[in-house]
Structure formats: C-alpha cells, structure tokens
Image (cartoon, rainbow, N blue to C red):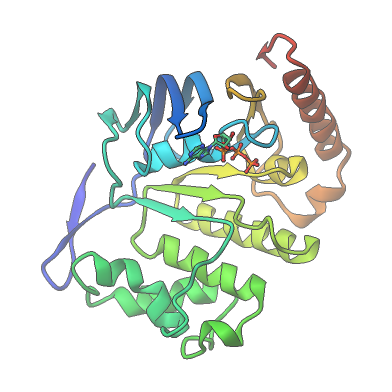
Length: 276
Ligand SMILES: Nc1ncnc2c1ncn2[C@@H]1O[C@H](COP(=O)(O)OP(=O)(O)OP(=O)(O)O)[C@@H](O)[C@H]1O
C-alpha cells in the first residue's frame, strides 16, 4: 500500500481500498467449562472497494470473523490476509465501528473523533480540519464542542463513525453499528454511510441482522449458516448506485430482500448452499 507524508512530517497510508481473503478459517473458543466451535473452514474473497455485508443466525460467528479480520482475534486454523499480508495484529489502515459507540465522556466530540490520531503519533496539521469535514458529512456540523452526554444515541453513533474514518482507513469493519437505533435514524445513517463510502472509496465489511439494510448498502451479501458458522452463499446485489432513498420503495429492492430471506432460511435449515 502507498503512503503519503503529512504536513507534520509523519507518514500515513493512502486510502486505496484493501482486498481481503480468508482461507479455511476456523475458530474454536476453549473455555474452562466448554469448548465452542464458532467458525468452521470459512473461505471468503472480498475485492478492494466492495461493500459486503455478513448476515446469518445469531451466534453463527459474524462478530468473530470480523474481529479476526481486524486482528483482534487469531484464527485457530487457516489464514486471513489483507492485501496479501497475513493479519497478525490490528493494522492502522483498518477502521472499526461497533454497536456501542464507546465515546470517551470526558472528551468533546472533536477530541473523540481525533482519538485514533492522538493514539497514533498525534494529530497531523490537517487532522482537525478532517474531523470537522467528517462531522459535517455525518450531519453534525457545529457539534464539535459538545460532550457525549449532550448527544442522542444516533448522534453518538455518527460521532463514532466519524472517529472510525479519521485515519482514512482502506478497510472499514462495522459490527451492527446501527442495531440499537430506531428505523428512521438507521435509514438516515445508511444514507450517510453510503455518501461517505462514495466520497472516500474503501472496502467495507458490515455485520447486520437486517436483510433490508444489507441489501440497501451492499454489493454482496454473505449468508452464513448456524454455528459453527460457515459461508452458505454469497449473493450479489444487482441494484444501481448511487442508492437513493426511493430505492427502498422499488419492487427490485423487495425482490432482492425476498431472495436473500429464502437463502437465509436455507442456511438456517442446513440445506446445501452455493452460487445464488
Ligand atoms: N470470547 C469468547 N469466548 C467464548 N466463546 C465466544 C467468545 N466470543 C464468541 N463466542 C462464541 O462464539 C459463537 C459465535 O459468536 P459471535 O459473537 O461471533 O456470533 P454472531 O454471529 O456475531 O452473533 P450475534 O448475531 O448474536 O451477534 C457464539 O456461540 C459465542 O458464544
């Protein structure tokens, strides 16, 4: 991956999107009382710049897979590579956003967004400008000096997403980031996320329980089967981009949702998967 030199002389990776491969990845959690086989022989190829959602029954290992891509967990067997390099630790070019925004309550919004920069050698000269731009992209211009307790849940999640984007990651990993929000806020944030993704191309891997959210956002929906999780099928989403709000009322949107629901039912019932 190329790097660029910032105004303060530090070097940072550029935003070229990353490609991900997983080869026969399994994960077993060895607990004191029990042994949980969470994932079994997962193979996955995600092309650079794709928006891919993972969907599947509760406990099928979606978060585990995401954490292994993030370098926060190690596979029990098999390998995960980003741009051809095996993941062995968290990488600076990866941004992560989880269901809980986990903002630091003693930092204001701007300082929360800049946290990854502060932890990674300090703010470059353009750091705060970028934080303000991201805040504006997320519809929160003017909230720089607010503290987390002064924000709604949706606003906090917007700040957390801006924070995950501040390092210009080539790969964004999102684990049910909008799961706790009401339907309208979730749809607004889906729109904003796609706007950011279009503006700053990057690979996104997005875990969700919502089929409609997965369809609205994704190029491909990866359907996983029940524990131990396996890849049941990878379904391409053939819907035009940019995705406008009106798409949510289109017959082809509902057709795709229906199709993925059927594939998910197959996966839950343990029927054979494959190309869809
Ligand atoms: N650190 C851990 N130690 C032991 N078991 C774990 C650990 N993390 C996850 N598991 C187990 O691994 C399995 C997969 O969990 P994971 O959270 O990846 O599933 P998921 O598909 O993301 O679930 P959900 O959709 O409910 O969020 C579950 O049975 C879970 O209990």
